[in-house]
Amino acid sequence: MAETQETVFKSVQELASSNQVPEKYIHTRISINNSCPLLDVPEVDLSLLISPTSPARQHELNKLQSGLKSCGCFQVINHGIADSFLDKVREISKEFFALPAEEKLKYARTVDDMDGYGNDSVLSEKQKLDWTDRLYLNVFPDDTRKLQFWPQKPECFRAVLEEYIENMKLLSDSLLKAMATSLNMEENCFLDQCGEHRTMVARFNFYPPCPRPDVVLGVKPHADGSAITILLQDEEVEGLQVLKDDHWYRVPVIKYGLLINVGDQVEIMSNGVFKSPMHRVVTNAERERNTLAVFIMPDVDVEIGPVEKLINQERPRAYKNVKNFVDLFFQSYQQGKRPIEAAMIS
Ligand SMILES: O=C(O)CCC(=O)C(=O)O
Ligand SMILES: [Fe+2]
Picture 1 (cartoon, rainbow, N blue to C red):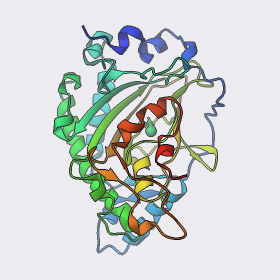
Picture 2 (tube, helix red, strand yellow):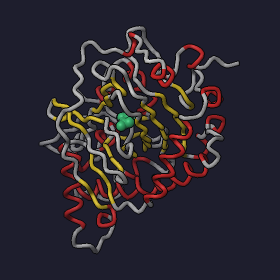
Picture 3 (spheres, rainbow, N blue to C red):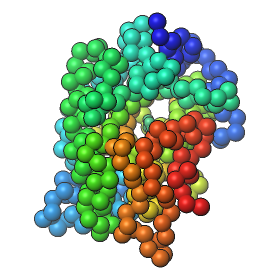
Picture 4 (tube, rainbow, N blue to C red):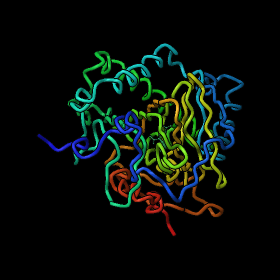
């Protein structure tokens, strides 16, 4: 049998149920404040954003642009995805993580794979671990799918995820176009760089209650390596924090909204006009939290770089062109370095 993460490490869910917090999860040098101020994240109405004739469109574009410049994120509302369908998406995630351990282990990630169910890959002795169990699935293009890791239970898992991914494709097209338009750029300038075979990864995150939220993080500080990330937050339980001007802020929950954040690759494409925000997840002692992140990434074979029109005298080219950014720089995340530093022109 292939060696799985779980043969070596316990799931966080098991640790939580036995009230254990091993040393490896404890941060001694980071101060964790679970009650920092709320971030003022703009709410952008997608139905107005994509309607060329709407007089309100420019206002939405301005909100999107200011959100991305000031904190690297915004919430999308009126996105056209039914509330009842988002409930279903949340439900398949909860049902999967509630299955008995031996059922979930059928989908366990093997040591040399990204796909599957498991927790943090351990790359170094000193690494601090995240208080979360995940199900990580390549979902697009179809030939990147590894269906052996797609849960058979709940039975509707696959159909619901496929429908959600179709929605995410359409949404990411609209958002990448709107982001370019908001900078008075040709609307396809970011989308075209992602290529026809842009890749999409779904990561279901499950955060069990944690007995030591004062010293344990759900996810340590990082910026996403994606072009953009679309996050379906837990419908009630907060946990995500964004770093702005060197201070952490809580991201508010909008039950049927989707949180969009810039990833490193749009930071590169926009020559740094849009910044990929540092963010982290805190834990709490009372309630579990479920989220679903969908990472939208350029085609692995396409080289991306700053759009020419965003390079000028005031803003000289700040990044090199890069290809397959996520693979190239994945390791630096676990080592606590910012991958984007490798692409910066110093
Ligand atoms: O669960 C969250 O709120 C955010 C997760 C996250 O940052 C990630 O998966 O990259
Ligand atoms: Fe993230």
